Each structure stands twice: as structure tokens, then as C-alpha cells.
Amino acid sequence: MEVVAYYRVSTKGQGESGLGLEAQQEYIRLAAKQHGWKVVAEYKDVGVSGSMHPLERPAGAKAFADGRPVVVAKLDRLSRDVEHIAGLMKRNNFKVATMPTASTVELHIYAVLAEQERTFISERTKAALESLQARADGGDIDAVHSIANREDKLRKGRSKLNRAKGHYTQRQQADERAALVKDAIRLCILEGATSLQAVADCLIARDIPTARGGQWSPTAAMRVMKRLGLELNKG
Figure 1 (cartoon, rainbow, N blue to C red):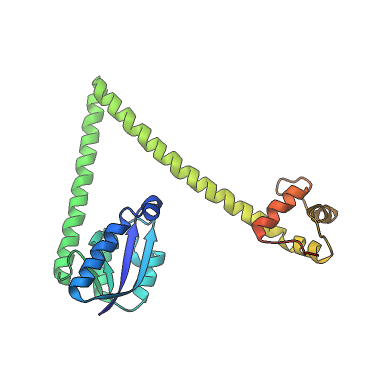
Figure 2 (spheres, one colour):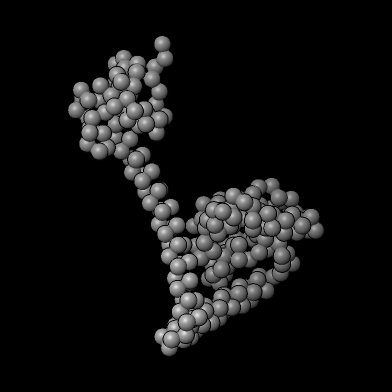
């Protein structure tokens, strides 16, 4: 039987290092060997949360659109949501490498139990934090230090995420600004600008400001042209 493999890793780091991904590939490889499956295509989502519906993920949507059975290493690689699993069971054919002979009923029960356990973990974590806060409010030094360490780790995690978002936004804005002058630079080149200085002079003559509102320099022209993939005419 021909199948397609679907992998999901929650962080970009896991995708680059292979941690998590290699284990999933091994689970599927062993299951395919044992059950005579032939993996004809592989799809991988990196940095995607299990809370997102599989059909809304880039690679997940492609895997299920393939038409052949989809194989995942573990059920949570497909989804952590019982509703998602139940919906996929009704409309799609998928298999779980760690439970290759499980029926749809068994998979549904497993999904329910897994979601229930996650709820219990969340509740226990909340209760533990409330107890820790109460101890800290009562003057327990160890509890105060534990809360401070946890907040520090959370703050660092948020800062890292915000920096990543900020870098993406800056790149996006730079791309958008560069696109505004793309046609003007092309026209300058077509009209005979054969150097970066000539391109800068041409843009100045057309009263086109830089992104910061200043005048063009050869360096500014070079940076924008590189971002746009434009080159001067040779010869």
C-alpha cells in the first residue's frame, strides 16, 4: 500500500537539528517495513503548534490532499485536539505508526484520554503555581526565588519571540519600500544608467526619496537593487 508520511515539529530548532524529526521518521520507517507500506512522499511542518488544525497547516494540507493514506509517527503529531482527530477520521484515511493496527474507535479513545491528561496537567500546574505564590506571599525565600526564576525564563522567551517577530516585520517593510522604487530603478537602467552612482543620480533627478526621506547614494541604490534582484547592464 502506498502512503504519504507527515511530520510535525513544534520549533524551528527541532526542524534544523533533526531532534524530534529523526525519531518520527524512524517510527514510520519501522511501521512501513512491518506492514508493507511504501512511503511515496513526505511532508513536514516546522514550528507549527499541535493546536492548529492539520488541514490549516501548509504541509498538513498538502499531505491530506494527496489522496493516499497519511501516516504519522504519533497521534499528537497530527493533533492534540479531539475534535480535530474526530473530524479527520470521518473524512480522511490516516494511520499512526506507533499504533498501526488501532481502529478508529481506539484512536478516538486515545485522543480523548490524551486531551484529558493535558487538562489535568494544566490544572496541576495552575494549582502548584498558586501554592508557590501563596508561600512567597508568606515570606518563603525559596518560593520567591522560584517565582523570580520562572518569570525571568518567561521574559526571555517572550523577548526572543518578539525579536523574531520584529526582524520579520522589518524585512517585510524593507521589501515593501524597495518594491515602490522597483519600476523607477528599472527605467533608470533602461535609460542608460551603467553605475550605481548613475542610478542614484537618476532617482534624485526624478525626485524620488529614499525610505528615510533622504537623497540616494550609490550604497543605498546597491542595497535596494540587491533586495530587488536588479543588476546593472553589463557592457
